[in-house]
Amino acid sequence: MSVLATRITLTRLSSSDTPVMTKRFRADLSLAFCSLLWGATFAVVKNSLDYSSVFVFLAARFTLAALLMAAFRPHVFRTLEREELLAGAALGFFMFGGYAFQTAGLEYTTPAKSGFVTGSSVVMVPLLLGIFWRRRLTRWVYGGVFAAALGLYFLTVPSEGLSHLNRGDLLTFVAAGLYAMHIILVGDYTRRHSVAALSVLQVAACAALAWLATGLGSLSGWQPARFAWQGKALLGMAICAVLATAVAFSIQLWAQQYTTTSHAAILFTLEPVFASMTSYILLRERLGNRALFGAAFVLAGILIAELLGPPAAPESPEPTGADPPESPPPTSARRIALEE
Image (tube, rainbow, N blue to C red):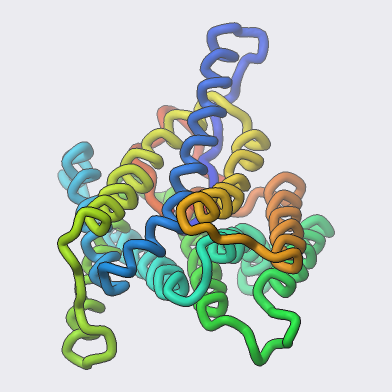
């Protein structure tokens, strides 16, 4: 997840140009595929936690992703400045916090519910901007927040009441808030620093924090380091690090040059839907009627905030792989998510 997240501002297209329209169709398919990859990771991570502790999984995942991204973007290290390093560290902090709470939450909740709760980070972005940055909130933002809040209630609170609330859902909700903060900071930092540099730096910082948390958790006895060198564990790691991080966000970067913001918004809202579908296929998870009702309202809130609300911030809770070619500074948010 992702994640953080959450879209990058798109270059203008000519609807009368047939080759561009062909690329636009391919771009839409590519973004749908990215959403599928990100949605599938919820079930993959859920399975991987049978073989690994939370922090070890995150440390290995983001170390591998950082190495891959650095190998393909070695030039970002040649001109790094102190401000860029600090910005990357700040992004990595909120990125790590989001993934830590989300992954920990998956130990107790289901992938489908985690996907929809995480998706609410998109709705939190304009709300946090209004509360802490004094941005003006439109009626559509209020409508999106209300729909998402109502949906989260029915999705996470069982009919027995708040006393039976799943701790995994609470942890995931905290993750959504951290992802929203990550989205806002990305919107600020990418106007002043290289997107490629920040992408690599935040993933590297996330990996470093995960290794630090692994050591502290083991020394304190709170969460002993654990990893089983088995095929399923290694496959899950490869899917999350290579496909869902390095590959998916590189595809996203290419695709968003050739499609529209509204198309991207709709396609990214498929992420929690794909999370539910893959969870059903892989884990046989079924959402009850109450949870389905809540999920529908969360999805409605995300669509309202994305399509009708004002652009808030770029990117997702997860990294991109390169700078957008000759595109203006990013101004809208993906996840949604992250973007992850």
